[in-house]
Image (cartoon, rainbow, N blue to C red):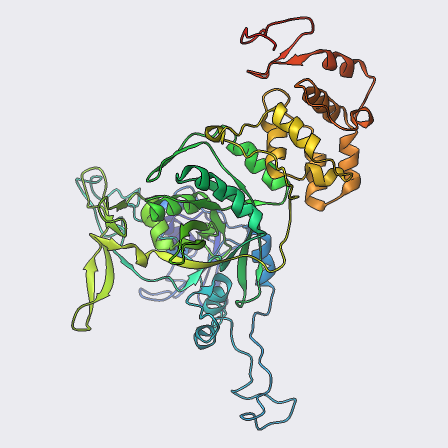
Length: 557
């Protein structure tokens, strides 16, 4: 009887929980139809303790009707990123040597001057060179879980600015609202932690090739950073985003604006990058940077086991190339706070047209309820005051991230004096086709095939070209590039697919060195392909003996 009352009140299945009289899980109240509360000596006002059982299964109504306090703390079945799993197992403490002047104990003793510090120690972070304003996310987690309860009840809740659905006590908005479904007001605070602590380009060539577009046109440009997350050892439990390549999607840029176009190859690019062991960040110049960054961060959430939703914040970072006071190009990295992500996700934040350094919190309308958004400021008398975020200084939403280049460059992909053209640069006269591929192969005659083929933009062309896409047969080559395995690369080089690619290149009038050594020479497929010719105008492969292209009707020469 008692379990039925609890299940009905909170929307649980009858077998999804256990009820105890004591906090230490003693005095379990078992399900029984002949036991009442009076027989169990339970009076009005007595505390009962509810724990999820191993077979806990909330009913379909629980997600909307049960309070947050009755959700399981965290999401233990969430698969976090490898770097998160690694850092969660590290000690993280900051070990200090014995101070010869202040320490008065033996070599095996410890005192306040040499005892290890916690990774979230603010005094230590402030005295680093340069000072660190934001602790790492894993240091923040250690701070939450370092108390007496060891974080037993820690749950990282994602902010919601929307009215909770399922409230039946009144008419829907705008005709009714109550305290149960109304989102709480938001007071913006400067976030004390960041999910990524450093952005590092593997080498200058990666950034220089991207900047070449701006140098030649003067227009703003956008690109996705692809790389990996590693440990940043300069900050306790820090995370570094290492950039290995930049993909430039279709876009229209001017000196003062930027418009992203639909990219039909986006999923394929992500798939190829994943097989190469790379992840996507972002890199762009835009007049609405905070809102754009918030949108991208919402699309790439950070998986977190301590959040009931299974995700919290984002590792997606933004790097901006801009001019400095020394008339040199430099890079600035940042993220937006989790509060900004929530405001952008729920469409509560707008840009200011005449003041790009300000944002504006929307006002409620008949179509959308928007909670009040405040921020704290200091008036001319030095008093702390609370202001309505209309308008809002975007500095409350931005988290700075240092951007660096290594002293010793790293090369995930090979660097060539004559690199393969970058995608979507037709406005500069740089196109990706079999003529440019043949030119690239003829100018890069390295005896190590892996060095020639290890070009991010070349690999994307091999997968996405319309004449002979290799999406289903390139996995072995991608594995060879990822592991730097020349033997695997040579195995793929002897495949029929690569032989066909080389024959297609030979039809555009560029002689490839050592062509007789490649691929499955002598096969019927090879001979037939060699007799075909590619149109110089549309790249269509035509049958031998024709003087005009069957696709565009233009002459062969």
